Structures are given as structure tokens and as C-alpha cells.
Length: 329
Image (cartoon, rainbow, N blue to C red; front, side, top):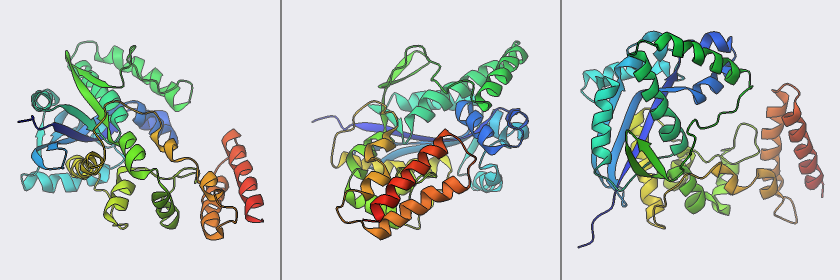
């Protein structure tokens, strides 16, 4: 009998370094840049599932070194969910454990599966887990303050856009997650979704009608939330943004991908670009669909109106001119 393939679908919620707010100087965009580049996991959850989405096991933990330290946890975007986590703890739905204990459990579960992944594996597996692991190691080492001094300088550069958010591994491997001496096959549900579920006229029309566009209005949304909405025809669905709940949603997405295609390993860069730009989609017709065009026009113009002048805004203004000319046909 052929061995059943098993997968681990993981999600995490993150905070960032406790001095991020000081460096950001109250600017949410500066803080966001730091948080993306220096994520610290406070909530991690995963499922063990098969291709049909059947869940054989699931785990969910709060990380004591992050969740239980207010100066760190309060940097989280969803810090207001703390009461929710406390209620989950009371109900026995989640446990607070040290990072090292959780990692031992995670590695043990990884040994059971054929591949590991997330909806954005670049973030979860190439940034969040490695950086949190490094942070915890430094936290319990005698050179923590020297390391923190270096991180303060790096975070300042990140906030000032003086350094790019490059993966810190010298030999970046998009097909594997290497952790503590073991390499695991790595899949990315984001890239697989854009390739096999979302890159079609039906989804793009839904995105326009439901206004599921990126902030700039240039691209269609391709998040786990928008993907799940489309697959289930539930457009009022809102992600919980707690690790296990989101991992379960992403497990369902994996099952829909697997129903059409094999689970390929590897990370695709910028998968949202697969769908093309909203402007190009509007111009696919000889005669403009004005309802669709105005949705894109309003989204891009709203972003322009809320932004300071810069090269990107100038580029968006050019796109608006192109769309306006097309609409006047």
C-alpha cells in the first residue's frame, strides 16, 4: 500500500524587538518595516494533515519569553488580543511554554511529515522561526547587550530604508527549511494558491466586485483570508489572526490545491504578481467595463490622495492617466 503523504501547516503571530517603538518614533510604517525584518513569535500553531485536509494532530503554544514580557508583547500588531489568549488559557485551549520546549515538540512533529509549510513560508520559516531562535539564544547568553546594541543599529537602518530586507542566510534555499541540523521539504501555500487557485478571471472579478485589492489598488489581494473567502463563497469571513485558527484555514486551502495538483516544494517570490495588475485586467476588453474601471480608479486615487509625493506616487498617477484615457473610449 502506498504511504499516505502527511504535511505540517504552520502559522505564527509575531511581535518585534522591544525598542522598535522608540526607533520608529511613532511612525507605523517605520515600525512595520522593523516588525517584518525582526519578528519574534509569541503564538505558534500547526496541524498535521493529509492531502484531503484531514487533520491528524494539532498543536498551539504561547511563547513565554515573548508573550509573558509586556515590553516585547506590546509591540505586536494584535497586542489587543491578550484577553482572548488569557481566556483560551483558562479553557485549556493553549499553553504557555518556553521556546526551547516548543521547538523540541515542533521538531518531533516535523519528523512525522513529508513537507512543512505556511501561507507565507518566507516569513514563517525564513524569518520568524530563525530570528526568534536567535533572539532566545542571545537572551540567555552573556553577550546579549552587545547583540542588542548591534540590533538597534540594524533596526535604525531598516526603519530609515537604508538596508534591504534580505534573508540573512548566505546560501538561501527556497525548497528547504533547515533547522538545528535537519533539512525539511518546504512548500508555500501562497505561491501554490496564486498558481493553481486564483489566477483566473473568476477570482479577479470577485476581487473587483468585493474590493479585495492591495492598499495601492494596483494588485489583487491574494491573502489566506481572501483565498478562503473565494473558495468558500464567504465574503464576510475575517481571519482570527491567532496561529492555530489560521493554520486550520490554511490546511483547508492546502486540500483545495492538492485536489488539483501535487504539493510542489519551494518558495515563489512575490506570488501576487502572478495575477497581473488590476489596470491590465480592466483593459482586457475592447469596450471598457466602467464599473470595474471605477473600482480600480478609486482605489489607486485614494492611495495617491493619502500619500506624500514620491516616485511611487508619480508612477501611480501615470497609471490613473492611462486608465482615464481607456475609460473615455
